[in-house]
Image (tube, one colour):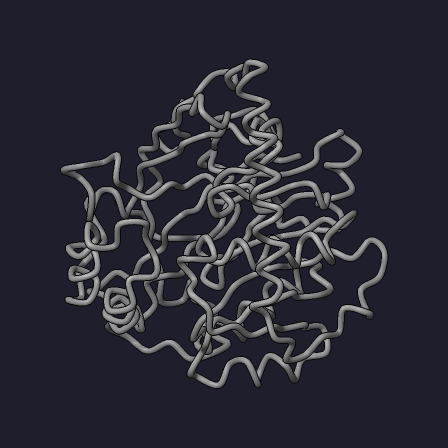
Length: 345
């Protein structure tokens, strides 16, 4: 197995009857939270009546993402997304009005707490429940760009997955970084972020199953090497299940890292697993990242115990250098497939 391919976690755990029952109760509580959270959302532009059967939908929660949004929309339109369902959490950069002018965007606004809404998942859960049922839905952050093997468009990929009897496809979140210190360089809205975020770590990764919810826990890579080398268990979780043929009874549990019913988690065993998978390019570290880190540290909305992550925020705000001896120059999706970081359907 190549260094970039990660560790095969083996078969997912079998959940006993008592555990399955508790997870059903938990799923009902999460669905109820999403149902209540709809009252926190104010429509700015609701074009959901234009959604057609078979449309691939994208669902995301945003805040002050004017720098990333033009390329984000361009990328996902090219991938076959036909409607965007977006929640704006009190942006101050003019992006809500800009988004509302796009005919394939429906957008809601809220000033409620991102953290109290399960880091936005209660709001997105409502949109998925209300509009996503029966559709293939892609749930991502504004700094995530999904790549598929061969750059297969999402409608074709979804049809292939459905023919295989798969209800979801997982992806590795892969951090990109600039060659120089954070905060340097110029990135214009609409520019391909890989023109400035030119490097990544191809591993090593660790993958293991978590018995409590039957979900994968994939860690390692660039951010762990730089920020969490002394305590790797606090490093970021890199497995996601972003593309799902949605059912109104489904609920994301922890961002898109895990989902209920728990059987869906078995559809991604990491880059070394046997099932179809993609890569989410993580474009967090554009030149605005030091300023955003200072703002996130002030707001304390992004972690369950945000005070534990002060050194992380301070390092980003200080313009850390993220490349290391084993960092590679990013060359494109074919390179990631050759490294075993995603797998064809």
